[in-house]
Image 1 (cartoon, rainbow, N blue to C red):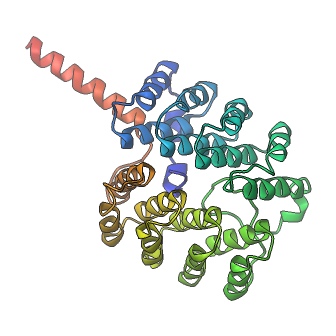
Image 2: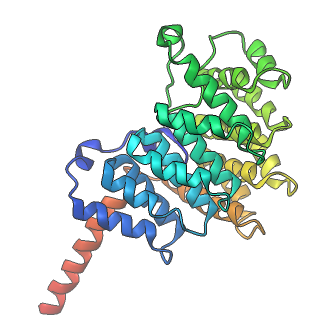
Image 3: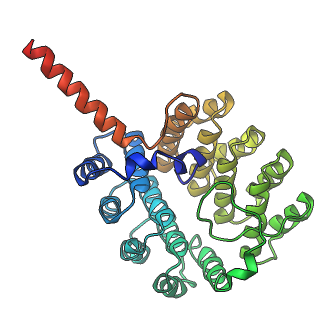
Length: 331
């Protein structure tokens, strides 16, 4: 899911040696609608870590799926890969008005993350898109890329310990109460508030986590969604109650509820997992699917598994089991 530190730091030396045939096999798991969603997610993050044109094509082939949650994560992964070869696929999703708003939003965010000039031109065309989850983000994304044209302006800013490609650079470090004031001031440009948000995330203290959690009460569903995302990155138990409150709110946007579920899955405490189990049968498909995937993430966080993106190891394990069975039959 969108996003956790351990997903970024996988066995890259093994992945670089992966054959085209193995990438195809992992891609087939992702595309197979009969596979458990949690296994398809693990296949997706395996492809994301592998990178390259074949992995991009395998991911993009899944945008016809019926799961908005899965398509949202497809777009997220393509953006994090920062490979311009994904741009045509993301533009196609962004321009497709039959796609869910949260999927189109994530495609726009992914284009911004890639940062190619052609992608920015497309983003600018969608500033006035009638879907409310889309235009706010594009305004911020275009502004960021204009600012980043002068990289020297950001050389002294705090580093991102989570290694994610963020839609805004952090603000300069300041007192948490001052950053919180910026975060919650809905009269300020969204881009400025995002910068405060990422600095609070990078601080990763209990005080900064509680300040971020106040953002779950802001009026913009998009903003609440992003707050939940960064709380999931931090993985602090201090925000479990706040995330649970928004997940339990049936009137809350499904885009926000799903991100709260993913954040709780990353935190992976018994309390967080108990809340997730409450919504495994939620009427909103994206919410119940998010809880399934989040509980799988919790299982990973609490296990001794080497990596979450384990598509390659599962293929190897499956091959070994088949060989053992064949040997037993022949004996």
